[in-house]
Length: 358
Image 1 (tube, rainbow, N blue to C red):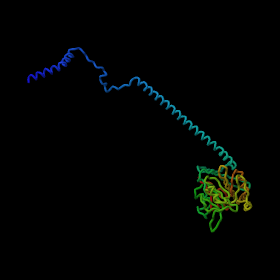
Image 2 (image 1 turned 90 degrees about the horizontal axis):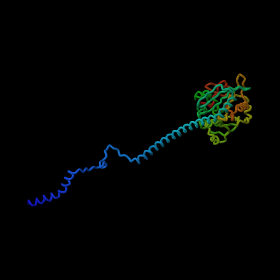
Image 3 (image 1 turned 90 degrees about the vertical axis):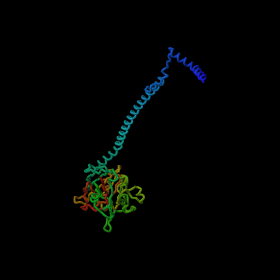
Image 4 (image 1 turned 45 degrees about the vertical axis):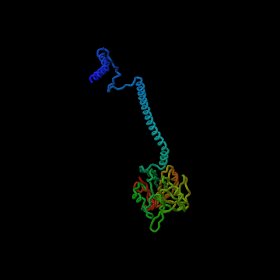
């Protein structure tokens, strides 16, 4: 057994001899082994850097982007300034154009107003402008009410007591409805203790009396949905409906068409020849003109003829004119006051009234 162990020891010694020799040589030699810095890992706090060749293009691109953004901002600011200036210019142009467009209407209004004289009173609001004028003719005294309607609810026609067959004075109608002015409307007929509007009568777009074809020189006159005066003889209900009437009444006769006087029926030239009168007319700009003439008073005024009323309408530049109920029915209320001199001594109770609202 000892021989075997000795043999193993010699074998191990021979196997380790080369390594022992190398170790002894390294310990006794001056040889130094040095590793490069690349062999060691970089510190964690040190940032990796791009090669200089890559840094320059990136920096150049950033500068270009900043320059482009600056130029874009300047361009937007210039465009915005130009836009605002253009808007201001367009607004000014629009304002000038609007004022210029209104100039012919203003000149026209001044001209027709000058023909009436100086207004003695004016009611002005967002809904209307109503001007009152006093007229002194050779044979009678009269009053003119020129009305510019600015709103669809500035004018209406009402039934007396708001019921068919009832009647009230124009002043009572004005006060009851809170109106600022009022004028008597169409003719009437009495029956069974009631007072009914004559022929076709429309209130708030509805036929209060049904449609009646024209006869004995009767006509219909009122306003449509655009506040335009419509009037004449309508043979059928469809013809009248086509005008889209908002309200209106009937009487006789037609006095003016397109500025030209119309033939006055013989009956109305003499029955009566002179009397208090109420006339409704319009202008080219759709303003309304009401003429109310006094008559039968102690001061000697005997009233006006229909021919004289035609002459007044032409003198004042009216386009179309229609005779409303006259005599004791003629009524003109302005600002809560009775303006004309009722021939009955007091205002007559009537079935229809034109009212104006502030």
